[in-house]
Length: 346
Ligand SMILES: NC(=O)c1ccc[n+]([C@@H]2O[C@H](COP(=O)([O-])OP(=O)(O)OC[C@H]3O[C@@H](n4cnc5c(N)ncnc54)[C@H](OP(=O)(O)O)[C@@H]3O)[C@@H](O)[C@H]2O)c1
Ligand SMILES: [Zn+2]
Ligand SMILES: [Zn+2]
Image 1 (tube, helix red, strand yellow):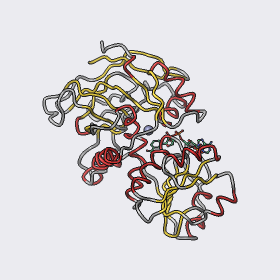
Image 2: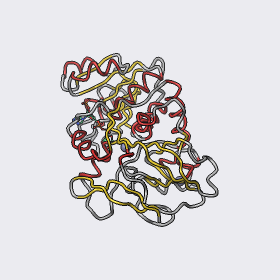
Image 3: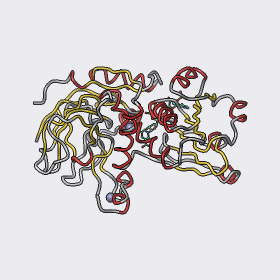
Image 4: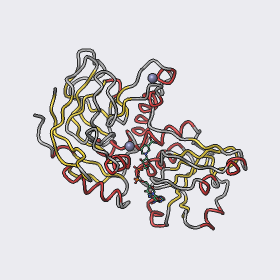
């Protein structure tokens, strides 16, 4: 087994410990983790952690290949790479064959909190100095993308990219992004770069200047019923990234005739009034992460358009502070941990 320092859940927070990683299998690469974004999913995971299996969060990271299995031919030592929240899948089901490994019928192996398909161990995330991953699930990091600010593309970015693409966001379409956080701000940048007329829906007007700076044309205050009513039936695509359970009815109200609300933020039960769909033949959808082809395409698109996340970079020793501030919605718009403060692998 390999050993690497990392941050493991311990009660309400994370503490530094030494993790065990598998020795490289033939199709594995070892990645020195340089930067890892802090996703709201990490916060959910830490706050609801039962303590049964060890929890090391972190599922959007960039780094450098340091070691290769004998069949891992896609990379060379020293290559900059990016890895997201899926690290394996069956490779054979209809979804995998369609390049939608994120929907693998056998369930994709998640970067942390998943079960390794070969040895049955629980996967440990990238709030650590080294990660071992099947080479097919590591992506070349395009030159020109800042590796720290690019890390959030691998979860937040791809999670909004797939529905934007699938729902045809582009010139002539109107897109609304509900919740201007990690996912939301990247949804705005991507929708704008795709050519869509883009609007932010936020709880207050406090992020209006940021919304415009990100390229949005407008900001609607969700708490203001007059503004919400004025925007009725306006958007072909609404990407709802709100991190808490909420009534979807006001957001369905924003959807245009035959348009779609993609509910990607809160992944629990949703109650829907059929009439909210009936009136306007509206569609309710969801999405999560991305397949390998879409992830590679998103990275190329971001390189071409100079898109990365707006980040606050912190040494990984401040991870608990990052989680607490994320909980208070006190980040514009993504914390990224710099893992170089961890000791060398032992
Ligand atoms: N589908 C997937 O695969 C996937 C992938 C990654 C994350 N997620 C989930 O997506 C959600 C967003 O993640 P994130 O990392 O973008 O989180 P985030 O940075 O905390 O942003 C969430 C945004 O939701 C809004 N919000 C927060 N609390 C709210 C409340 N009480 N009422 C109404 N709005 C509230 C805020 O926007 P305003 O201040 O603008 O109102 C906030 O900026 C999380 O639940 C996360 O677990 C899903
Ligand atoms: Zn995430
Ligand atoms: Zn599969």
